[in-house]
Each structure stands twice: as C-alpha cells, then as structure tokens.
Image: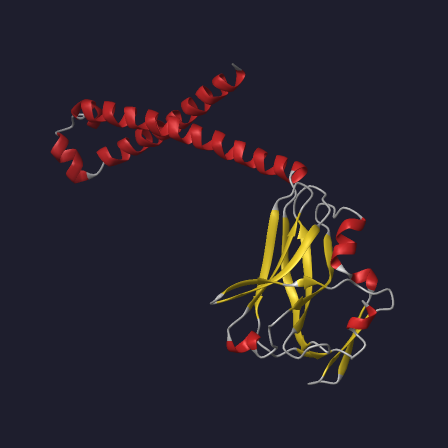
Length: 243
C-alpha cells in the first residue's frame, strides 16, 4: 500500500509541475500586444477553458507515465545490483593467439590461447575450458593439452623470443583453484591440439579461434579472435612427449 501511495504522489507532483508551468506562462502570453488585442482584454483562461481541460488531462496522463517510468528505472537498478551479488558475469578477451606446427605430425597444429577474464558479478569458479576453430566449412573442436609441471617452451621464429608457459598460469587449473571475486580477474593460457589442421589453414580459410568456458552455475561463455598468422610458434620435438 505504501508503494501505491508513493506512486500516486509522484503522479500528483508531476501533474502540479506541468500545470504550474503552463499557468506561469499564460500571463506573459496575454501581455503580448497582438495577443491582448485579439483577446479583447478577455482572460486567455476564459477563452480556452475546453483546451485547458484537455491540457490538464494530458498532464495527468504524463504524470502517470513519468511515475511509472521512475518506478521502472528504480526496479531495473535494484535488479542489476541484485544480479551483481548473486549471478556471475564473466567477460573475457583473447590477449594473445599463436599457432605452431605439431612436432609429431606436420598436418596437425597446436594453438596457444592467452586470455583475460573479468568477473562483473557474483564470485565464481571458471571451468570447462574448450578451444575450437570456426571456418566457412564448420566448427572443429580441439583436444586439450594439459600443462606440465616442468613448464612448456615455445619459440617465436619471427622475433627469436621464447615463451615459457608455467603450470601455475594454466587456465583450467587457475579457474578451479579458487573463485574469481566480484571485480576480480583471471589470466592465463590454454593449449589445444587440432588434428588435420595445418598452420597455413588458419589464415587461408579465415579461421576464427574460439575459447569457451562456464561459470559455477553452468552458464556458457565464449570469446573469439580471428587468426592472422602473425604469431607463428615453434614447439620443440620433445614437447608432446612431456604430456
């Protein structure tokens, strides 16, 4: 009942505001020489009583709409705050994407995905990481390559730099180790093995690399990036033997 009276008060306040503005403007309009001559010194209110009733009714309608809108906005704000406290909201991006030929079979490839995930909602673990590629011919799911406690080494032939992928930065492990708090983030890497996909296929077939994951409620998320072929990687011949 209290909400109902609050709603009616908002309607009344809005109506008073609009009517007050109109009644304030009318005397100034009446003093305009041409208007005054046209009115023959008869008050504007008396000449247009039906029109003023219509305007008053429209102000009431506007008052109801404005009050409803205020209540709706307030409810939407409260719902958003409630969801922030109770529902995870994981927003991510792929920060680095590298592809390398498999040292085991040259017709296969290994994809390195480095990603950053931020939680804008309730605390949640992040799991069920899956890497896939999407081309014009369809979607192919990669095989997850587990991390190594010895670290994974990959070389970037173009620059000569070497990447060291530590077990502690492996996304599936970090995502399950502890919940990502509201406003917190998760950064790390993921490796996937694609059978029958050459490194050159990533650029010639306009391949999009997709990393999927889920929150504690099972809600799925995905982030993606178009492969450009600018980050080729070279893995040592012993790489897959360490798995």
